[in-house]
Image (cartoon, rainbow, N blue to C red; front, top):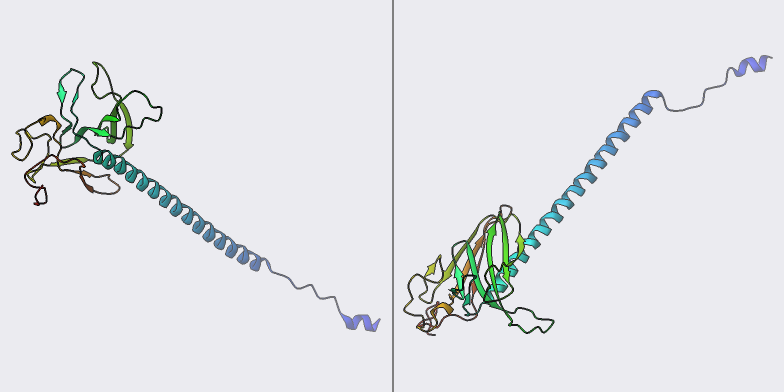
Length: 224
């Protein structure tokens, strides 16, 4: 009996107090929230970068289609829907229409490899119009394709054989350096295009045409 009294009551097992558990849970919650916020930020950044890359590729594709068509321009005039002759290239400061070579014909159909195309803004988007025939029938309408939504503005200029830039082509008066024959078939030496998507700012391209009009002097001052 005396030995049992000397041993005393059993000691309680060691453990966490309620306050310690609350503090631990609070720390875990803060760390989990920070980790979630970090992951969410990474996901948003990746999404934004992917969207920007997709938009950049879209702009590059549109400019590629535009400039590639210009490099294939040829001096072939056509007849419009009303039967009147149209110049090989008909351009203003915000719209251009011209004849190009390279119209693919994988089925070997009995037609030319030339095509009439046009580029202009419509409802804020850069659009390409393609005619299935060079000399159009009354009421014929082109095939439209949207190249770039939210294109902003489009500005065009045309470099004549006199090395002067113009906002319209063909010029109102024949240039002294142009050949007298086939005036409607004359092409500028180069075309400058400026497009300004709101998310990229102004982008500028100068495209030298493959078949410049004969002249007395090149646009860079060298003899023809």
